[in-house]
Figure 1 (cartoon, rainbow, N blue to C red):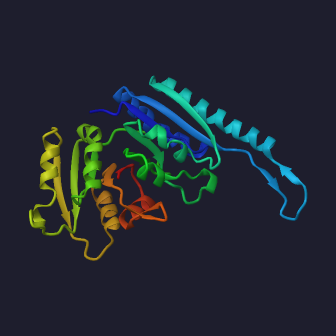
Figure 2: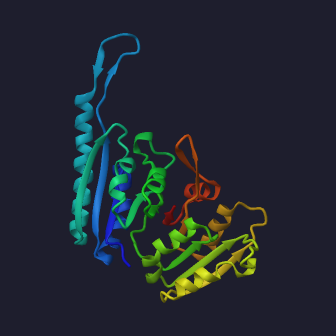
Figure 3: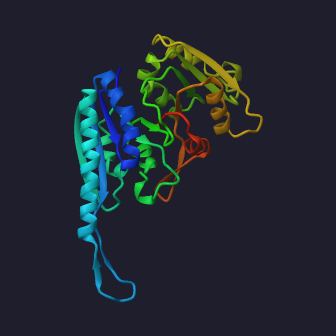
Length: 280
């Protein structure tokens, strides 16, 4: 199993370099086809709130959106040429200008989607709707931290946050290509509970055995949170082990037809220090 089609969500000039630093070397290693995708907001004609004349900003806005399309496309195509990977460009103009929303249909026919973690200091127009990519595509999402500087796209130490859920199961098998390349994979279970079919101390053994059959070096770690939030426990384990990829199921709940992240997922996405593969 490899990632043969990779979708790179390029929301802005600020995040494009980080996303390509991860997506393109990965594509080169897996002989993948990479789709670079960027969206811009459609120009708007705005009426004065004081009842004055309509102000048409469309010309200036169109020039700026065209400039960004050109700059980001040129960056993508040049970087893809240097890496020697098959590629294509998809540019969109939409009401929202959100590359993630515009990329939903493209993501559904990709093996892997790569995007940047939300930067809380970015302007609203530069933030992609990560929830849409996770909850509406059915595809794994590899998030790059907005503080990431290194370019390496291979991962030596991987932590699989495991709770036996369908989301964690999907994430584990979606991450198989990364795990098969890694030196080690740790199955991390936080506060496992006894079930009718399994004692708590046996948590993670079945998935570890399944991964080991793929010739993956697997260990199991059981952590008791002691009342600390599970997201913090996972963060601490990442720091202790020097892991360079986190794999986990993405949990959320629907509210008025919009998904919002559950507690552990939200904590990890806010504090992310390493690339994180999420599946829902």
